Image (tube, rainbow, N blue to C red):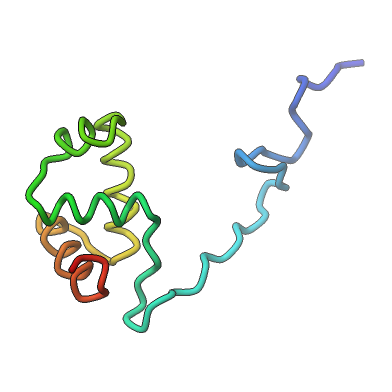
Length: 105
């Protein structure tokens, strides 16, 4: 009789929070919080977009916030997705949309 690997369940996977059946659909994303279809930014994303508007690089933001450059990039990527920004001009688009939504004064 073969034993299952500890922590593994047959026909399921762990998504980092809970066990799910293979083939089970992911929960739908939260509904947009703003009229233009963008999502609410987290407090850290709001802080980072303000620093972006001030002209800081990701490395400067990381040093200022005492976090890694990769963590800053993670927050920027999430913010770009939430604001619907992509491509080479994503940084400029994000700052413009953040101003329009009132995240930057």
